[in-house]
Image 1 (cartoon, rainbow, N blue to C red):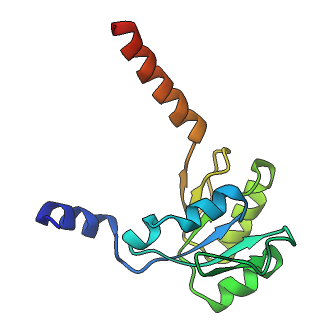
Image 2: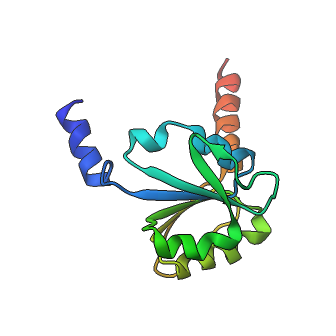
Image 3: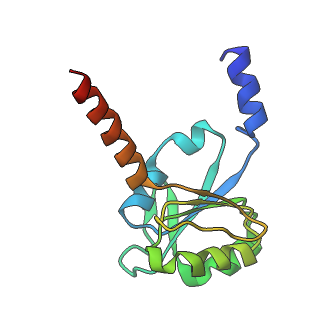
Length: 145
């Protein structure tokens, strides 16, 4: 690792030992949980949560999927720094509010709804916007040919 990369990681808090939960264990939540990006950045995914009885009790990458009804109790018993939010858009504000009341400090929001939660750092990810930016860039390249 280069000195500059190490310094950037230090400034960003990479490797600070953050813990995370994934709320919404559907396709996207499970795919993110299987990714090695968390481990590479020193984030420990300690649980997943969902409402689907067919998913509850299963594991993803060695991590248990729990019933969303257990969210508050789990957060009280375990220090949770951040939550990855992959629930349906219409449930995002309710779940974000629950996470804030549990003391979660950060939310990585993949719901497609712009969230702002008092006293919680929120990073809103808009996959559709990223796709449109790529389409724009491809269109610009095609127009130059």
